[in-house]
Length: 58
Picture 1: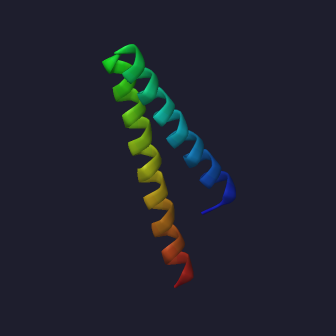
Picture 2: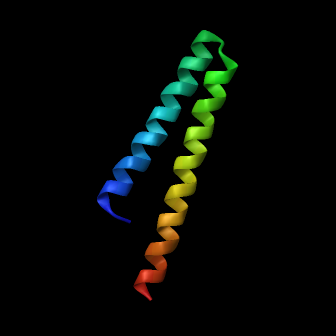
């Protein structure tokens, strides 16, 4: 996984956490759901990159 990918995934995860928190504070379910979705996408990207890294090692 490249450094740029790691930074991008971390930014998406943090952005999702911020959206979720803002949704909780403002009682905005749509914003909260968007934040949770962003976090799931970031996690999926991390898993995909980790799988690629494993194949590169072999």
